[in-house]
Image (tube, rainbow, N blue to C red; front, side, top):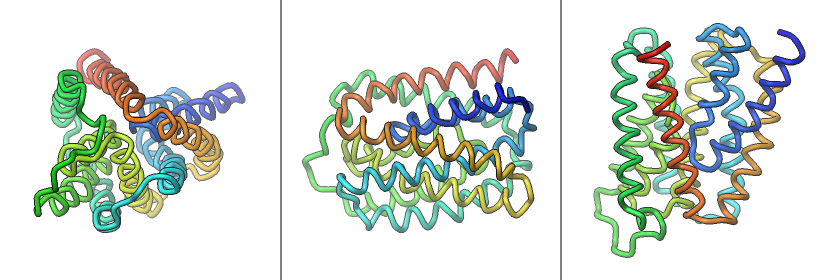
Length: 254
């Protein structure tokens, strides 16, 4: 890998950290950059997780300093996410990604349409009390279902977490993003533990990218907190469109 490719990877890592901190989806930048630099697919996915776990953790700390965190949700969902993301990473080779990608695309299109057609969605916390089953449901969806998906494939994990917390728990986008960063940090950690045990992580490259990922994540978290739910909503829609285009190109064109 030459110097120019290395610099491009560092810039991509910074951009990925920013996107991840606001709405998730940083892998949209970071993973393709690794592949274009000549890193094989599995080490690229593993190294992406190494850089991302630092960025998402940094963003989670930034959010936690100014946003109220519901520990009844964040703690059990985070612990479950480590386990289920690890299981997803361990079974990644046994699951057909070709069959999974169209389902992910359909889900992203649904998310984009829902957020577009419901302008008030995520603007303010839901006023009415949560149903009793809301917290267990959020833990199951985020800490098990979405976490397992992140270990298997990954694109859109942060976005799916934000939408899940907004729909199930009635949070606004900023609060949902804060909780999603905690769970996403745990999904990255769970997958990284499996990839690391298998010797698939490029540690020096990943740690260099992690520094830039953290810098981007800190900036993104500050902007999201300062500009509020409307800003997060706009970035979310842009990321959803970009992910659908990228996944569609990889699945049906490339």
